[in-house]
Image (cartoon, rainbow, N blue to C red):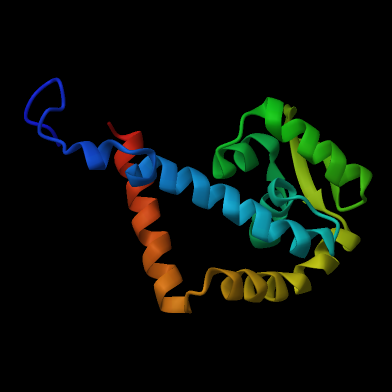
Length: 153
């Protein structure tokens, strides 16, 4: 926090790019994407597609809107992802019989069969981070709290 509007109480060293929390989070997110790419290439998924599949493996069939909310993705980003997953034969779409306005996304047999690969993907990423399970849980919890703090400002 600063004492004045001009930020005069913050030392110049702390104003450097590599000292910024936002840049550390941004660059870590890019590093995660780069680390996931070769692992996910082996199963034919992109990182955002993997996130969609994780939601479906956990929850089963869900409306498109719910998937978007869980992943914090808008429909313009989510729709092409779902289309590619459908073309790959991993998901199916159907109108909700109770509300024709909603589209329900479900795993196909092929999509369900891929769930067994999650442990191997998680192990590979765990090794790439250099963190044990406790450290990863602590870091995840801190980042969740950071997101909560930023979204309630």
